[in-house]
Structure formats: C-alpha cells, structure tokens
Amino acid sequence: MVARLRQEGVLPSDAEKLFEVTPRPARARPIVRRMMPAKPPPVDDRLNMRPCTILELDATRCHWPLGDVEKVASEYCGGVAVSGRRYCAHHWVRARGNRG
Image 1 (cartoon, rainbow, N blue to C red):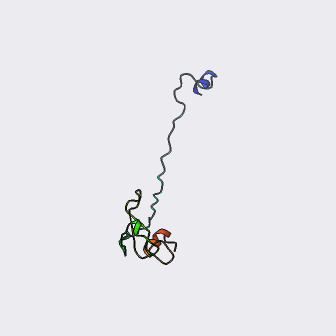
Image 2 (image 1 turned 90 degrees about the vertical axis):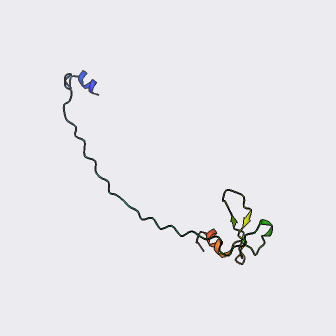
Image 3 (image 1 turned 45 degrees about the horizontal axis):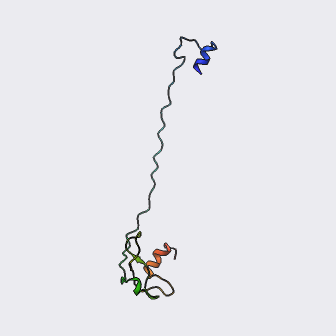
C-alpha cells in the first residue's frame, strides 16, 4: 500500500514515517478463580464383598466386576444383591451415578 501511495505522489518518496504509532497498553484481564467442588472420598469397594468367580455368580450375588477396567473381569463382588437387582446396595448406587 505504501508503494502505491508513493507512486501516486500522495506519500513523499523520502518520508520514512509520517506519524508515530503508540500501541495501547495491554489491559489486565480480571483473574477469575472458580471454586471446584471437593473430590468425594474414595469408595471402599471391599464393603460387604465376598469375591467370587463368574461360575459362582447367581441371582443373589452382586455382579460388580473387580479389577482393572480395561481387562476382562475374572472376579466379581459377590456381596448380597439388592432384591431384583444385579448389584449390592453399594454398587447399585455407583452404577446409577447417585440417581437413586
């Protein structure tokens, strides 16, 4: 753009600067601190558990898998299942995500 203005004679060819540019000082952004909810205490999965294998599971025992999430379960909670449910009371709450 400067070259075009010089060619058209609007801007003198020997002029380096016609004005000073003073940048605005950067405005400080307000610091926003958010309160994160406290992490819930770790759940003790050993509550009323009687670890068992898949062969020992029946309708009265909790089917909550134990061990690493990415591996095939080889042991299950085995605690007393809530009537009509596959899990004990403790694992039923965890499975429902505290929705009841």
